Image (cartoon, rainbow, N blue to C red; front, side, top):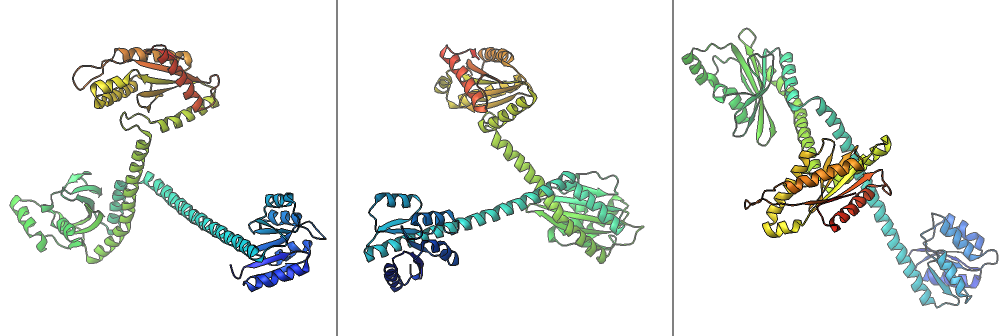
Length: 490
């Protein structure tokens, strides 16, 4: 690596001069010293890329200098090549053990020394590149974590807002505020899903119209026009506006008396398949709505719709997160807890037992000879049996108990506030229940099966963790199976 800076430290002035001349001829920058005690101060003035260090000086020991270099965080990664005229292998072993990059004997071959220097400089360049990559990766990770923290804080804020106001409540609040600002006696929010019937979802000051009131658009041409065009519609006088010509004919034919003077319909988009309209009206006794009212209401509504969309999104996100959380904790076949969720619940319950000095027990249930059911009736029938087993367990346990599928044909029942005697008695009732229960089969012939159950309790001898509790139950289950199955062991 040309332009690399090399420090030569040797008490042989002739050798230093020769080495300096050779290295400079190769394009290296060279600094030198003849005193061991000067190495650290020289490095402090300017950090070299590589150090050629004699093992013995008149004023100091080169190995001590090496130790001081490697103990300093500034120079820990700088390669140090030790030089010595000594033949002692111990010197080489000791210096390499202290962190020296290489060891060469004097007199040395120039080409060999240059090759070793180039190799060490290449290694340092690779190391520095790796450190730089690691630093950039850490910075990128920190940025991602900061962004995640910001998003989490934002979600927390939005979650708090959503706890206070649902999207429906925001519609209702907005309808009341727009009505109050414009002095309206009637203001509604109408949602229309593509291919569906428009319905009123919020109203202000109106009587006789309930939430989810279904509208017929042929009676409300301004709503239909606003939905079709995506632009606000103003009808200052429904009795003369051409948009209402067919509606007026219907009113005349049916003898309908209308109290509405003017209307505004302001559309807004919610999602690709759903749109909404703010429907503003004034009666005959009130002044007509104007274009200024349209502009004011449109400004207020568009500013508020984003909050409504955000609330709707958060409601959906929270529901999705809850559903995903449930799926992550649930066995897809039996709808009981899966093994991972079970471990978390067991850990929490064991902590509760420790804190309040209570007790708990665990049943590990295995369906005897379950493979024969799959072989005889097929895997679909086997899945039906597993589902029925889970449902049966869910029906007979207490509300505080936990049922989980442990794997294959094994299930676990966690029994809080239950000692070993109570757990053993409950396990025996379960064993009898399964032995006498006819499980449905696809061919109509009921399937009979028995169970082996291992019981473990906490506090218990040698039980300090969830793994210990499960291991004890597994050992008890093994005894139940080896002693003939269809039995309970503690």
